[in-house]
Image (cartoon, rainbow, N blue to C red; front, side, top):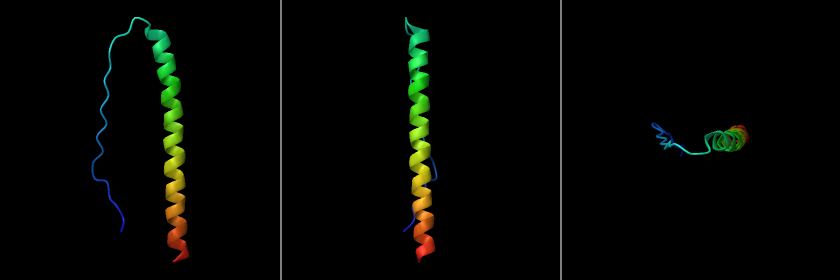
Amino acid sequence: MPIEIRELLIKAAIGNSTNVSNAQNANTMDLDRVKKEIVKEVTENVLRTIQLKLER
């Protein structure tokens, strides 16, 4: 049975830091890494789902 996501809620907290530039660089690198991981995982899941449908 397929699952449909009708709403996705993402919350983030942003605050000031004394070492803003270093924190921003680290956060940007972490964010890019996480984005790539998410895209890779979603792509794999979509391809797996398509393959399963083609096998039927």
